[in-house]
Every structure is written in structure tokens, then in C-alpha cells.
Amino acid sequence: MRAEEFSERKDTIDGWAVNLVTYRIADRWYCTIDNVDPGARFARAEGGTREDAERTALEKAQKYLKQTRRFPASG
Image (cartoon, rainbow, N blue to C red):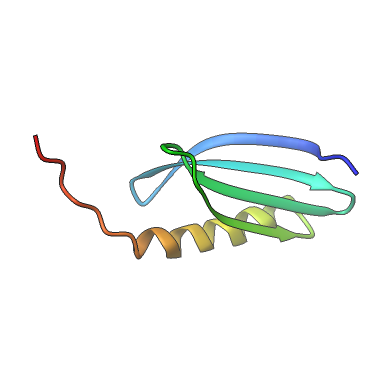
């Protein structure tokens, strides 16, 4: 099986730069979200449509990012 209708885009969620990757394998859509730097994948989802997969992954990403503490940069 091969990924089809692959798309990749950069976005911002709650002030965090993220990268969304969406693709279809057979009749299922998959979406993964990673933080741009260092590129660690932290949310993924699948659905019957592109919109379902992206919506579910974005909901998970928002939940995880709200739990992440940010420390001010010293300099």
C-alpha cells in the first residue's frame, strides 16, 4: 500500500509552531503533528475523511500543548 494525496503544512497552535502531515492509505486518512523544532511527533489520528483526521489530531495537539510548561529564555 502506498500513501496518496499527501499534504504537509506549517501552522501555529497556541503559540507553538507545528507541522501537519496528512495522507490517505486505501480508504483511511491519517494525520500526524510534530513540533517544528526539534521535529518530535506528538499527535496523530486517523479518520474516514481528511477533515476528521486533521480535526482529531489538532484536538489532541491542543490538549498536549496546553499541558506543556514554557520557561522564559534567559539571556
